[in-house]
Length: 212
Ligand code: AP5
Image (cartoon, rainbow, N blue to C red):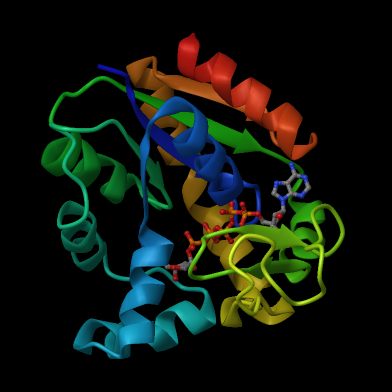
């Protein structure tokens, strides 16, 4: 069985971009807690109503709430998963181990980058919710302005991708990442990669990390 992959990195480092490539090429399943939460908001479910304001501000949703959503959407006995967006703090790292991974082989890949470049990356991001394609007006523009190359659907600019919310998301990240890295380092499963390179180069580093 392939190791379960835990993608760690600040907002905009390319976790979702790389997850898509890993799914297409390495046969992994992908679970993104950000996508799951945004789906709840789009459905206008009770949970969606509760978390909308939190996500719009760029704060973290309650650990247990996200854990339940995660557990309902992955089945690691039958597939190798990419965990994208979970854990966000040391408590979530412990919850992931105790309630989801339960001792399964895992690898944590840290997307290391100078945080200064991320505001520009994120403000130029456009996403296609149905196809899951992720574009960037600078590094990966769509062929037709405002439309997804794959599905033709309209591209959207995530509500939490405005400058003020991005700054808060980066602050939250800075305040929570160190103990998570220490935790995976002490388990001997942490690999750090340079996420400032092009998306294809980063993918090469990800494959090396998976096979290490
Ligand atoms: P979430 O959806 O997880 O967002 P995030 O972690 O902030 O990550 P992003 O989706 O912003 O970035 P990414 O690293 O996937 O980058 P991408 O590949 O798109 O979380 C959103 C919110 O949900 C949180 O703020 C919180 O409120 C809540 N939440 C989620 N999980 C939670 C949890 N576990 N607990 C509590 N709350 C939770 O790339 C970004 C852009 O850069 C794109 O335009 C892309 O085309 C471009 N790009 C990618 N790679 C490169 C490259 N190498 N070079 C140049 N451009 C690149």
